[in-house]
Image (cartoon, rainbow, N blue to C red; front, top):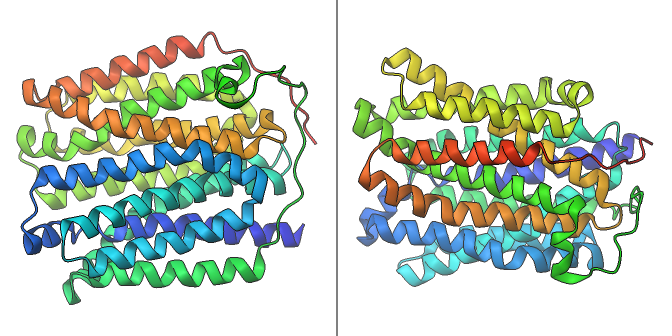
Length: 387
């Protein structure tokens, strides 16, 4: 048990480091843009290429996780992540920066399914919600800590955050090689999924609704999150520090709920009901963003709107890990793929709607979440073992 706890800690550190590295570069990106005379649209394309690369590779990497092992994919992903950050740090041309972001997408496609499958293998069904909550909290904490630390490093040198991220990724890879051991596969699946193989497995009923929920909430969150800074600036005149306060507060609230309450809520409600209630909560809060008009209420609504989103992700991941049996890599890859689809399409449609009316992206996000609520009522839980 102690060995498994140590491996869980290392896995959480891996995830934290990756998202810390992603967050580190946020404050210095405008400086890099100015140095290389890059337009905002080019930066948008770089973000899209990251998500698109992750989208393309996630289904393949999910199968590789099952075939070649969790540990190997995590280590390769960390090394590629370090390389991508190093390339961005030395990059003096747009081409190099695009290659860097695409390698970042490769690393995310390798690491996320592998870590999710690894956690599923070393935890029992009873302990898994807490472990998945910790994983989600590690992601949120990386995003919270990253920008602040990156801003501090950026004051010294605008490229330093990228080199720092590359070094800590390499160190984490070395620690993983030394401490992590390939886990025994957790075979908890209660039924065999017919004869469907390959891409057809996406449409297996026990998986399909879960994947649709992932897509809808990722789509809605990306449409909301990607435009929030512009929305707060244009509509309320928020300064960068105000936007940072709102987003950071949301991250802190989300992390508190993930670590302190997610396990209890899952045991009390079950994953499906928790997801349903979080979708309802998020839809209401996203709509309220368009109505509130005082500084305090804007901060309050923004801070708590992310709580629902932050609970949906680990709830779906936990549910999938319980029903996946020996297909942990597959469901992890599909989880990553459908998240990436939402992350690619959401900001594009949200941006188009924003140009028409400031509130439209949030109306759109709320409607998507309502669709998710409707789908969740057709969701029937599958039995799984509890040991």
